[in-house]
Amino acid sequence: MDFAVSEKMQAVTGMMDDFVRKELFPLEPEFLTTDFRDLLPLLEEKRRMVRQMELWAPNHPPEYGGMGLNLMDHALVSEVLGQSPIGHYVFGCHAPDAGNIEILHKYGTEKQKIQYLKPLVEGKIRSCFSMTEVDLPGSNPILMDTTAVTDGSDYVINGQKWYSTAADGAAFAIVMAVTNPDAAPHMRASMIIVPTDNPGFNLVRNIPVMGHTGSDFASHAEILYQSCRVPRENLLGPEGWGFVIAQERLGPGRIHHCMRWLGICNRVFDLMCRRAATRVITADGNTLASRQIVQAWIAESAAEIQAARLMTLHAAWKIENLGVKEAREDISLIKFYVAGVLQRVVDRALQVHGGMGMTDDTIIAYFYRHERAARIYDGADEVHKVTVARRIIKQKVARKS
Image 1 (tube, helix red, strand yellow):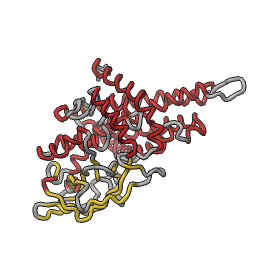
Image 2: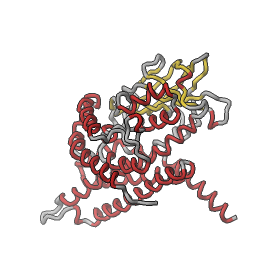
Image 3: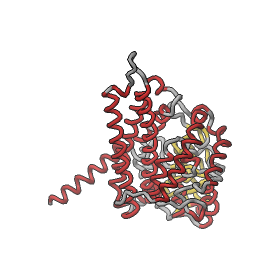
Image 4: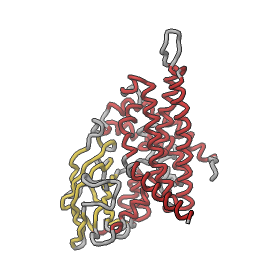
């Protein structure tokens, strides 16, 4: 694996980093205290600036207006943009749109690409992804109660979903529902496009997360599908391929997440080091940085961030060169390892800031609230650990025999 970063990507990430620091960091106090919907005009102005710099939609198809970066290059971009909670949104490569764009680009019909993919890449509309269900484990997507029953030329969808990120204000949802109940477990569900203004699509509520309900893009919705009728031509890919497509979506998506988490780690690590070096704690001028426990936190954080970064880049390289199937173990490893590093580094940074760390006077408390979920979504850490362990044990036993 070559760790060299091309001159082009050095220039791209350098420009993005400069933009994030100068244009987005100063917006964060308003982001923390303002309804997201009220912030949209200002964010749209920042998006216009990004388009003028030709840095819009870095990982999306160039034929639809994106930069067309490969997975390795976008990993570097995601690390830079992850420093701010609005970074990916302003640059047009935010979840869940990023994953939905990948699905539409690979499996969408020409009509679907014109109607949904093109305006999505352009940032003219937003989308959401409806997979997780209230009463069933999100870490096991073959367990699903939502159904899409064929009725003539339509599907009729019934079911309840939640944690559909950014459904508030989205133009359409990609819904995972059981279409083939008698098929093998991994071939029962399909993915179907449902416009959010369709009768039977009911946004029940934006779910409060750690006391924050959010709005528009910065929200997570509960959705009730009640006899929601859509044309069968809204099917994405072959019928029964919902699980297959979901796995293809989640592999690269975990690279995006992990590098974004590392961007967060870099941000709070910088804040922690500055706070330790400037926070006076004794009458003779000693700072927190003079204390060995704080020095240990800094050293441990630096080592863990570096290890997590190298693991993630290696997984991205493996996906790109060998495919998602060959990188399954690496994808699981980075999912739980990087999520754990994120939680520890953010917690240390908050602790070093003391009482200030609990407030929104810095960005740390926001990350502490909203990124705790990193150990849950895209498969709970425990599921990934068990999966990896089983695979390793099987390999070791096979070699011995």
